[in-house]
Length: 139
Image (cartoon, rainbow, N blue to C red; front, side, top):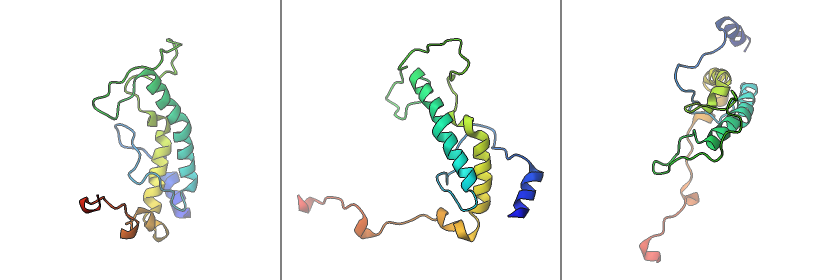
């Protein structure tokens, strides 16, 4: 653990690859040893990124999840000269870019350890707990 802190101090701040900010595939996990980084990221996403996403939805700048739905603005911007308003094409996760980089570096390191490997394993639901499809003979 001390060794990784020395390596982190020498290597500096982690950088995400250029391009749009994305969360890692294993995102909602909180491995042992990364609790502090994960909580900072979760709070940033729930506060700053969510506020920016809601503002983008109000102004009509967000992308629709459905191809046949046209996005329309809900309300007009009150302060046209305001620099705090989002612009079209903004990514709400850009608010948390450095925290995502720290979270990714910590999780990439900690998920390899034996105490956290179960967090990356897929799980399977037993047959008796699965939803049963209605068969034609039951109708």
